[in-house]
Length: 361
Image (cartoon, rainbow, N blue to C red; front, side, top):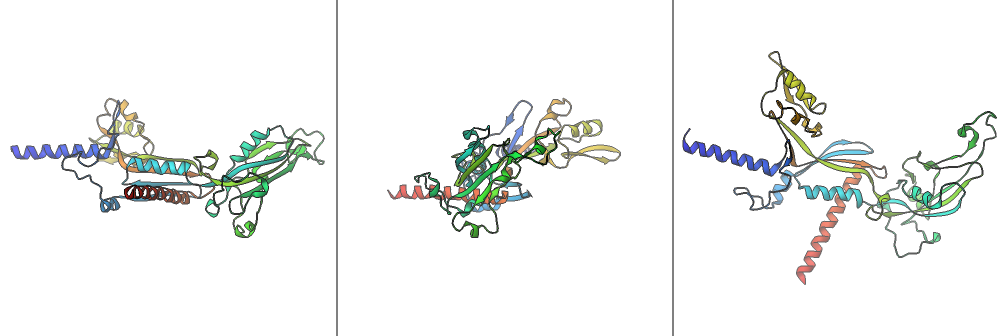
């Protein structure tokens, strides 16, 4: 090999190494490398990392992997971790929902204290579309008669426990002895205000789940409560959070540096989550191959094996985020994602507006 060819090979190797630093997080035996974003303009000679809208539009994409009525998994590719984390935090704390804010207790003879009961009621998710309501003016008084149909949902819980006259004399089971002794969220009734009965005729407002236990009663004990739901965000109180969880992880990348055969291949397969590594028959030998690295949990178990750790490279794709969103049931998860994007866009527009006003001054 000539000197010129050797130099080209060396430069290609250096460029490949730089590309790995820029785009991959490497999981090592004693640490994680390349965790910080380094692809900013001027950091690497020969790489144009200046912002380009056309390039961003070409590389950015969202792929929905799984979607049902309560959860969603999707890939967001071509963005920085800061944007992904901002999107996650908006899902957790800045997408508005309706939740019980004020509890008017007219009668509570149960053993549950008023404050504890009000707190339990406030955490019950309410099935109501917050996009159809306005934010309540915080300057208004909290009197019950000032609730409006455009910003408030009124609920009522009125129940009394009594003895079951048909119960067996020898029975000791409370479910047979008493009537209404278990107070569930299904006992909460919606009391329409103004024209709400017409507006929400097709979608009855109610708790998301009917089997949330609120209190236990005994004969003679009763609850008489009126509740007001308002629109809010989880930055003010966690009860307004629309998601049970919203998280992301980087796409795992597993590379076999050398062929792994026989008993080593079987041990390699056991080092990863089910479905990541598979064995195929090649000329009578079992050979390991990577089938689906997405399923890997990045436990780094393979690095504990002296004869295997140098045969595998573990990494994660820096700009490929796997999002998991689980809704509380107030809104479908795909709607929550759309609303989070709208909130993020509004923040960007607000920032641009502030910058323009500063330039004018």
